[in-house]
Image (cartoon, rainbow over the protein chains, first blue to last red):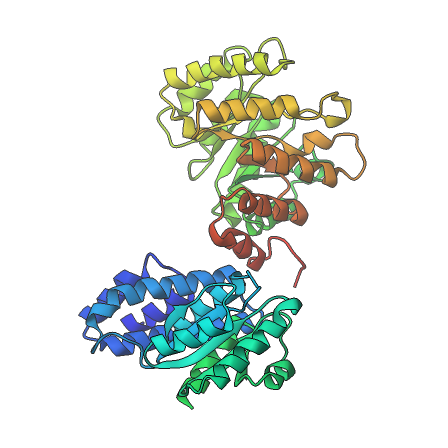
Length: 210
Length: 267
């Protein structure tokens, strides 16, 4: 097994204590830092798929993301340029009136693991805060709105409408959360929908690179 | 949780029959299924007449070691049988058991003191089973004096506070959980063990009582148990309880045991 393959395997297995050392070993072996990062992103893609298909559980996805983030910590100084992600920035938040953050945090982790820089606005985020965050941050490619309550679905609609009406461009809006269906997402004008964190990462990447 | 698999015991009629008939495959299979259930020790108790106990222990231990790498718990009411049986084991295991009854503990501790063997100690005394928590803890203090005398690290000891049948108790298990808590307070690294199924003696659907007891005893500090590891519901509740108690980061042990098929639907 090459060092890069070892990094991939240990990220997938969520071995956060082993990954940083292996990343350094992979660097010592002469691997390109970007290739190591891409390998880890690829691992998280596999993890996301396994989660989407019900093969693995939430904590297994969590520790894999944690392992990757430990690996990225030691890799960052070696990456070319300013270290910012080539996929761009993703602004994420749970919509106004909704305080649920577990699902949103999982989605955030997975989108970050796919290679985005994250701006997490937290929970109970008013529509204009989303808009302001798009203005305030560079290279925003994805805006992700989360909601768990049926009662806050109108707030999600409002958020998407405000973002779309802001005149700002260059990004796509994705929505998700237990009560959200693909039909509803289309109805309120979102560009994408994902039923779970693994799919959200895939969807974000596809929309950002389309 | 340290699991001591109880299935190879001549007190169980089917095992007694296998021993009498020298049915080697029956014994090997019991070792195999307990290994697959993820036990830490496989208990071996002959429960036969004194004159053939040692040869029976050797026969049983040899069979177990043919099919598994899991260490053995040498189990006999006769301390000298346990001491002799240690020699049949190809790796250090668990000495099951000693108590302050008579002077047996001296011989046992002499045998294990300078080894990595672990040891089960029961909290009964010459006078039988102490009735109150205080009396049981007094026996524990006397026992620990011996443990210290022989310089045995407390982490090698499994204290059995003696689990008695629930159906005749007037106060549930409050006395035994009090004893468990106090033992763990005094010696945080010591193990507290017990024969789980004792609790449900003479009650219908014993499994229910065994599972409820296990949860409460683990909450009090029990971290080792002698039980039937092929009881999938009991094993599942043990892993669940460890996670609920915060001893299983990200539930990874629970998920791992599920994946290993220790509990849950048989795929």
